[in-house]
Length: 213
Image (tube, rainbow, N blue to C red; front, side):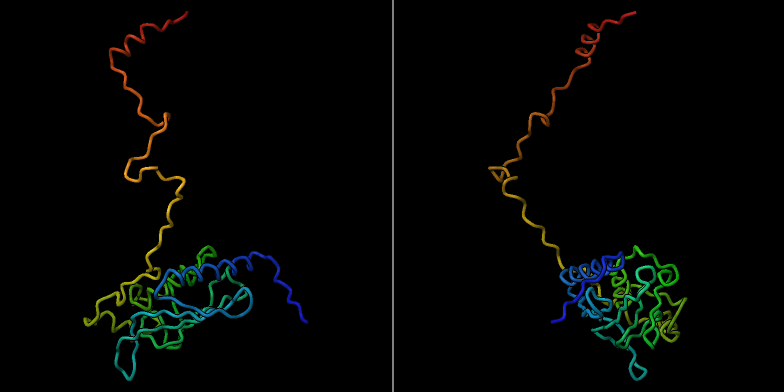
């Protein structure tokens, strides 16, 4: 019987574990997002799926598509460097090449290790639905030229943010509720308003103060 040795508790391993937990929470908070993890425990590779409206070009015709898949690799230098991204499904976007290379602007050249994986995925979803696009720095020049002249589509194509499920607020502790739910909470003696002092009362009190030489 082979026993697996757990990975060492390094900053990178802790970050990978946290990323995996973050994506699991994100999946629960989204009707758009899903993923498959691979590459070990904790995972170092994700196949991400966005289920929502975007654009693709087929046979020189531009039309709507409703599913996108992206490969995200957390390479050995991550999180010091940006994950490797490759768009796997057809997409027509000025900042995504037909080969699948993705340009995310300044994040590509000035990556910050503090950027969470969920933040990066939110940027990718915003690109897919055409909330995020920059025709001035294109990876797909045809898409950039089309974007500045088109009048068919209104952006964003899909109005849902990545976290689009309503958040359920847990019920409060019954022990902290008032006995009468319809009544206002009782004030403690410390929080009850104190009677105000009139100006004449203040002057009378001041007259009783003795100033010593």
